Length: 420
Ligand code: GDP
Ligand code: IMO
Ligand code: MG
Image 1 (cartoon, protein in one colour):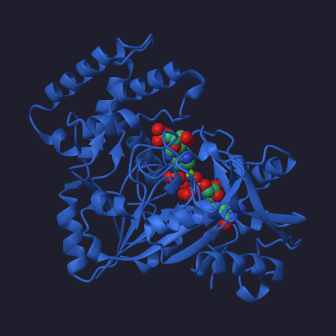
Image 2 (cartoon, helix red, strand yellow):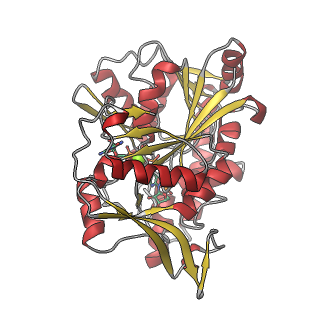
């Protein structure tokens, strides 16, 4: 059996959590492959709205195995809060969650380093979620990190103290006030929580499950434009958010990968700093934010909003080898007189259809315009009831990308979805 991958094609928050939740009944295993609590994946069902940060979005279905892969970074404090709120909903998490021993740990001092680094950057700051993501992946690649497997070793406390001291030394470079000790009690309580779960060599586990014919869905966090290599560097996150990240983040070989589901919003959003060619700084942008409730699931920050960017979307499709497109939040576009789609960038007087080395070189965006529709789509549950103007918009994107849009999501709830 091959594993399928689901990931975001824009700047994150495409609605990945909702779609994973909807697809989970078709799978035996859902596995997160990168990122950490910078992610906020929202799910809605039976009038419950839930936001997941570290835990895969398959946990609200019976019997599925959920895996936190080696590519993920875990903050024990956030993990403990997350598990508590899941237990409150009556989910028996212990029986269905496996954690890779090779996943790295976010220390309190990683979060402090993140904050110190951002503060030192002033107006050039990344707009990080301040969850310690960058410093933790730095320690991973710098070969200094602490991993989940370390917590059951007798010398864990010493290892922790050693890395903490390294961070204290580093923090001397910054003029930044901090107190690590006040976070440590909760952090070690979080470590005890992690110990309650099955800590596994998840690469063996996943490959065994695949060999046994089980269906695996790899769940990405963030989005392609936030990828450390291919995103709008340096305004990116610190992991590979792309399909290749699912291979390294789970230990699944490329030839064992199947479908790549690319999730995109019918428009674009971005939270944090960095270039955004189709950003709308006017009333239309405000309407998108208001109607789409575009406020960060992790930090509550208002998301920047703009029209769909086909140049960036086609780039993401290429990098990920997307096989099917899933469009979310089409309902938010109801009642706009017109809808625009960026088909090219103007850079130094020339119109280009590729992503320039530096997205800041884009002077303006070129648009195709579509007539809007006035119908409320939140109750539409049949493809035949999709307004013709939305169909025209969908067909245009399909023609431009050469891919089918096989799922259209029309609201946050599990039930608000159309398979085409
Ligand atoms: P993720 O990080 O990709 O999982 O996305 P987020 O959960 O951060 O942000 C997506 C937001 O849009 C959440 O509040 C979802 O509940 C909501 N959402 C998802 N799909 C749809 C949709 O089709 N229509 C509307 N109106 N909201 C949606
Ligand atoms: P999900 O999985 C949207 C953004 C931050 C910041 C940049 C770097 O919910 O789609 P980091 O904390 O990683 O150092 O921040 O990346 N960012 C996200 N934006 N959705 C996310 O995750 C994000 N995770 C990080 O806002 O600009
Ligand atoms: Mg999110």
